[in-house]
Length: 349
Image (cartoon, rainbow, N blue to C red; front, side, top):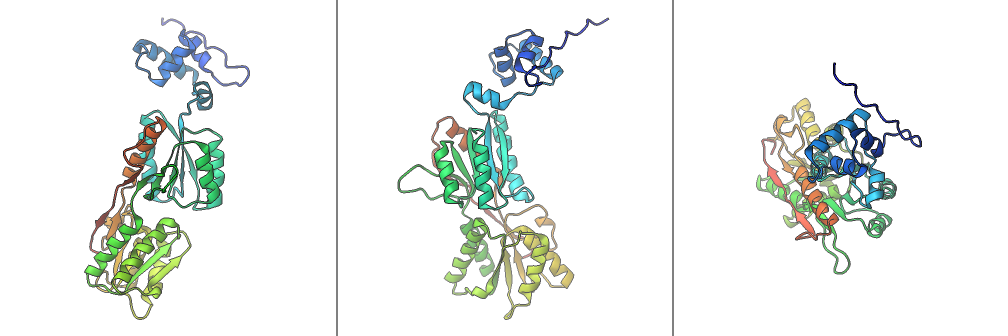
């Protein structure tokens, strides 16, 4: 007969939670040993680690990050603000961030701003109450009060998806991303090189990065002497396949006719390609179509979509690594890391 298991200690009377002290009593070790074992410190004997983890599993113990931060004066989470989770663009970014931070012992506290400056400020205020070890925020465009919150918090902060010019005086602005305008200019030059002259730019959402892409298209068309304000199509609605199809139909009715359409995002461009199929419009013979971000499915469209590939996961990884260094008090070699972009030229152009 196997020996009877040790009795399970009672839970904390004050909170009803299983505490670190409960685990220590069951494992017959000190609370500090439990803490070190669960943190994965190498100095703890492997046999003790196994005993502590078995006791924690039996009790269903979940560490309290707030208590741990209070005891050690060191938070174990990083606050991350992103515009939305329904777009694969930010899912890829989040995956890169989380994989990097988790391997270093940090958790991610995610806030979704929905491209709303007021909501972003409110989320940041809430997250700063939890005393995060670091901040990751998307882009550089935000309200003055939110910028003041970040500056006044004393918490290291890295900006994602854009590259920041450094101020002449004052603290550095840390960023990892790419030049959205330069990437859009490169795709516009490709369309010009293909012989297209009336190139429309179709934009939705109209967030800061979309407007930077518009600026890149505009300056390239102006330099070629081909800019026409009538070729700028801007819709503040959220980007989607349905909106892309609707915008395609509107643009194709324009006179004189356009020869190419550069969409600010791949979901719009995918919707346009589907609309072209339904309407019997030949792509690229009648009109070339290009997108931005190389989202999932763009290579499977008919025809496959030409687009700008942005390194979202790599940006997440690099930004998290930069933040880890800042949280250790280490200044990065450069406050701004430009990971660039890639033109992915397929049959739609």
